[in-house]
Image (cartoon, rainbow, N blue to C red; front, top):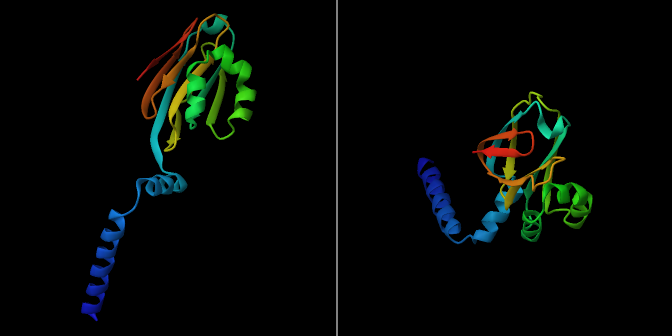
Length: 159
């Protein structure tokens, strides 16, 4: 009986090694997406200046970009463009992005924000809707601790 169990274990191990060597990378990548494996976890610590955005609320969107063609489009957008075209872009690229949105008032204390970045994410970006002129957009790291400071006229990101 013990010999049968050992022979079965050895056979299954060898079968796993042989099959494992022949799996194409595309199949492995698809399997990790299907299983919901993440490429990273992001922790955002947000601080807001008491005079942020001319004493007005600041809308902030974080985009997890999954589509390479949308990535090129997003990298060329200012925050003003993003917030103006947001609905149109979401219709145009329905599976191309995941959007997380917040709105904070100047001086507000914000709890730590943590989210998982799916493995098929190409890039992450942040847009802040300031009243002042400027791009108000920046790439975000796809893992780790990130400090965001919403200042009076623009925001900064510290990794």
